[in-house]
Image 1 (spheres, protein in one colour):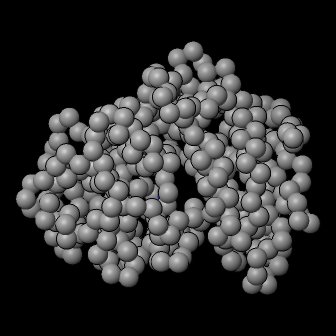
Image 2: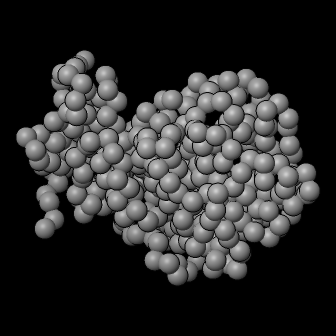
Length: 353
Ligand SMILES: *Cc1c(COP(=O)(O)O)cnc(C)c1O
């Protein structure tokens, strides 16, 4: 049964104040937002309302104990004005997997998809066509209950906000391989898209930035010997002709882009291996010249080539690769996202014309 969504439209649009060619990532938002509160053991009637600041109790549980999870996805406009999401049912499932780990009530998947569709349709003028342009969509849930008792809250708010974006990172990316700090531990919340997983990364990332790296490659918390992910991106390593990525685990986020790349690579005849990769193996491959590419994958960046890495004070540079897998896979993925190519996997999800 489809649940009714109450819609109140904005009296004026702020779209004319926005310079769509110069957008800082995720800092300009569309005219509307989706809101649904959880109270007395149930999700109340969802609403779409004008985008605006909201009141929250100073005692709201999320501010004290961090019960918050989120998602990130993108809507794309094709050459005929059609608007599409990319595999949103994956995000619907994943936000609930994350919610469960944080003791947050799950949100009905159909309502998640319907809310996305109605919200993005209402703000479809904000989805611009053209290379790199898209609408970044941010669903999230947080504990809204007022009270500082250290226990799972009984009231939550689920929301979706949308931000027009151009591409995420500019320039070359060099990464530092973590040998001290950790992002996620075995048995922890690393596989969940939990707000706190990010909060804990900012300080070590600031230190890495001061050393000249843009991001950190996280390793396993117990030994720092195995490569995990980049904290906002999953990672791929091309050694010889093989593309390697770590298996997902309770300390690695199961990225939609990652799993799509694995399927696309198979489709394009690129050999992949999903297996643990040690830092020592990576360094040996670099020394012997077989390490040809490293790239990160995530909704925001799609694919981000990494040009070098540092480990325990030594820097390693990657060769400039022609005919890179990164380029090939990114083009194939983006063509599907923008409806410029066949979609043999059934990944596109129509939002509106
Ligand atoms: C969101 C996220 C990713 C990328 O996932 P996608 O579904 O591809 O966007 C990778 N790692 C972490 C920690 C993330 O939060």
